[in-house]
Image 1 (spheres, rainbow, N blue to C red):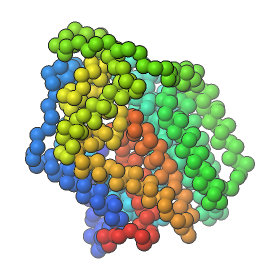
Image 2 (tube, helix red, strand yellow; image 1 turned 45 degrees about the vertical axis):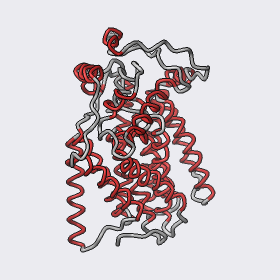
Image 3 (spheres, one colour; image 1 turned 90 degrees about the vertical axis):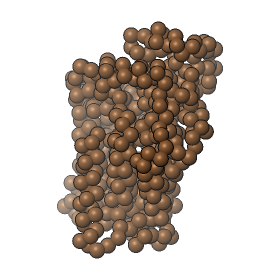
Image 4 (tube, rainbow, N blue to C red; image 1 turned 60 degrees about the vertical axis):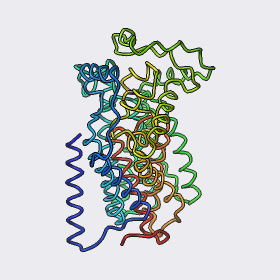
Length: 447
């Protein structure tokens, strides 16, 4: 975690040095300035020890220690200072991208790097599936049982990660068809971007998380219609190779049978009657060998996910302004939930399964303002902007908004923004979106 923080800090230092040498102030749209200021206020509030973070109950504290000891790689670091530093790095990444991507070359570079890292991750996962490797990085020691997707422990995170990168690959394909490159370069870009798009979309057939696949189809269709209306899409026979390649990946390395079975598990039947919740003093005896108390105590429409979200709302109502402390969701959950499953399952101990509610629960109102202003605000800004004379800006800006839209939709019922790799990609996508706004005049800037 700190290695990523150090890299983000080094990038910020280089950027700041460049600003000094160029004698300029970074172009910053007013909403970005407001969002970053809100992040600074929230961080300083907790760094100054103005308020104390919520502490966990005895059962949750002891149970979490057992989970970390058994599966250390499946638990995110909860250290408050680390969480604050990491989110400060994400804010800087967005600001740097917003400023530098006003230059066409930088926009290309940011987009290309995201695609390249996405391909490396997808190839690792595809190889892992073909070889039937067990556990993360082919390791079985200390890992949860079963096969996982590349460097991700959770398939839902893998799907969210793919959704941050494949729209940009599609954008490069469109750029090549729109003659945005010189003739010798155009063909190379078209071929390489098509292969990248094929790999990234094909990788969606190698994980078993349903919502990212659903989001990829729905949001992909919506933005394709937008491009059609803007006359951005030109059909090329070579485009037929992309779906053929996706099918080939699905057959050779996918989990199509398992994916179909998971979709069939969707059940919209009325919730079953729940068992009475036993006293918390008896919970240690109810914990199974897998360190889980069976899910038989919730009766709401949304089940345990709804219970976790209602817990977050209760915690927010108790401390709406200051929050319970960055990285302290599990502590807040232990105080405001009486559901043994939510209090014992290692995923619910870490994540609300709604990033917006988790942000408000941990960071308070200022953190929530920061999140809503910087990420959804970027999508709104791009969608309301007019086409530019430079088609590359319009295409990549809309593609960045497409990727960010998919992540934020998933954030309403999962935890993609709690995964550092996805949160970093989302910050860069938001920065790309805001960089298109800084080319126009309707907003107030700090320059």
